[in-house]
Length: 120
Image (cartoon, rainbow, N blue to C red; front, side):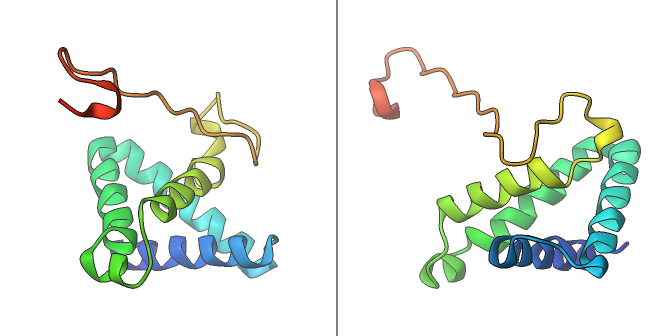
């Protein structure tokens, strides 16, 4: 699957899952195709997959144009939570959480000499 096709498929699935809350047979098949593609990319180059996903989130939610259109960090976080819960291939992620479970977020420790909130 080409990069842009995967981006389009993931954003379509996310928007439908958020709006409707259930998937049609075609959407279920598309989700499985996406998981298969993600698994293949993990096998080939996990770092490149991470870069691809980072760019997807940035371009969809964190560009100046997206921000001016009302998108923001909350949208990026909601997409990532959805992706984390729905798109990782189950056979690859033995610790996969149940749908609807909170994502595991590990805070970055403060730098020496910084105040709470990251202000130095």
